[in-house]
Image (cartoon, rainbow, N blue to C red; front, side):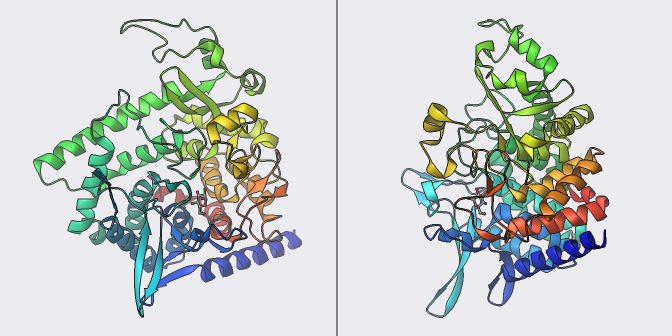
Length: 457
Ligand code: GLC
């Protein structure tokens, strides 16, 4: 017992050292945290940038430790960068879009912050999740500090309005879910998640849930977009709970679906072909478990299990209580597959063979059971812990935390692990990955004080 407490103290102290060293300064002010302190991959020099999504656990730790100034500076910095978006021949990137990352560059003795909207990123991928995380973090900052002045500033109000217009404008969509390209989330390489990935739907839902408490909507146009947001919130909730949900009953239904139905009364509205159910699903899905599938569209159900989308859905109340409990039951019953030696596997199962070739473009970093194609990411520990605590499964939260604690510090805080069970340090993994360290600190804080969950949307 004493041994364990000592191990915990040492690991947490070590994690704090990493967090401290990762702080990025602009003109002497802390404005964010860089992604990793040690990268073997010289081409990926962007690991020394501050990624918006990676900063979220840093921010929660700073807020809990009374260092809200860093979070405030970050929110202001990202907001300013938004207006420095690049122009693309033929169109302009929408003003609501926020960068994936930013860095401080020194030119002729002058420091300035440079954003990356995807123009420097590998594969030129642009994020969709950044603007959503930014808004969710703004809300968390406000709840945590009681500072209501920041979100009421005109430039913050303008930004919220732009984000809402961007997400709610009528496009080619026929469902309440948001249509996005591949690689626009935490998974930022081609992984066949274009369309309506669950991670984006859950973040979008988080935004819709909080926006009415932040956004004043003074003009008629803004009032109307806010009303649309309120209607969309309910529509998205119903849609996800019905169409993304998979348990044994639902699988039986899909297995016996009638297809090619025409008309408004059809039952199999998305025309999902039973033949598209992969063989692993009926063997793997336990009687008492269930989950939200990765993606849904016309004749398309991506049956893969994506961890972050499921966690965020539980955390933000996008799933019903029963669904949340079943997701946790799935973890309990399929622990070896979904957690194994390191919490938590990013998606299950990995794509192999022809599917891997076609969907990833034969990406050698995303070979089966590595990196984003079924690798294990300690950065996902904190949303797992949050989701487990929220659904009354503190036992699973503790178990995952103990598993991570036993290895992360000794392994020098890797970015990810490889292998079916996540036993190997990722082949091209960074070390001293900052969100690996902050995830452990934050998980510890959540376990000690579950009331922190009230800060979430
Ligand atoms: C990788 C991850 C991405 C993360 C970035 C920085 O590209 O896929 O989610 O933000 O590294 O850590």
